Length: 336
Image 1 (cartoon, rainbow, N blue to C red):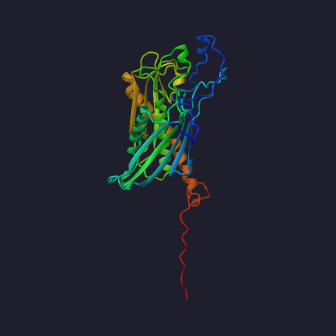
Image 2: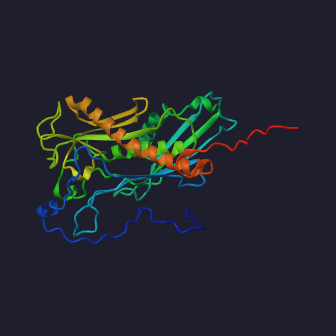
Image 3: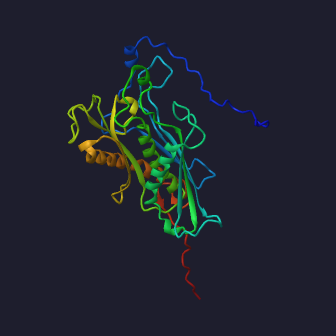
């Protein structure tokens, strides 16, 4: 039955037309493939800001800036930049119908916006988004001190505004390999960013945690790295190299990837997700992912520090991060 109160959108979905120059041949299109200009151990620049959603208890926004690309003859971007938002609602009392819980009940949700990827997403959560939510909950469960909020619950909602693609868009025309594990390589960076932005949002909400958790991702790629000559690790085969914070569009083939949720202060891992065929390089790949997480935790600490200074600027001396403390009146001596 048609809803008469609103104008329904087309059932198949629509997309804005993109006019590009015609492709003369596979060779001319292959020359437009983006290449990695960063060093193998260099991460993309991270922008992290807290307190963007006024109605939420805590919120954060994370963006990974894409590297500068040469001018292209097409309107299609050669690379994608990851953009995530996170909103934390709670802690709040559980409904009366819920059973008694002596600790905080954590609920995580990861949802792609319909326009987040090249293939349009649906409005209902699919199996991929539910799996990402389970991984995110595992990474955050060992961080939050749930014993301090009995009979309470908290919701962590991560929205992917722009997601990482699984590869270069021209591979469907030229013909390229997605890697040993098939597709889904862009989800590794999405999960690492979701862990980082959720940690900042939870800290912005004032929920007690044992430490700040950060996400890191490393991958084994099979293309030639122009800045990684001589970069050989134990367990890698010929032509393979290890890179941190990989962008699937910049590599011809992804062999394996690993995502970790890491507590730098306690030297603990709360989440591990490995995909592909790492072989004997599994331990090295895990160490590189931890190194990437350690590099990104400094951005989380700086964002949380700025949030605290903004909220408690009245009790901070001169805005320089020096705690002034409450104004205590001096004692008065009684004479006479």
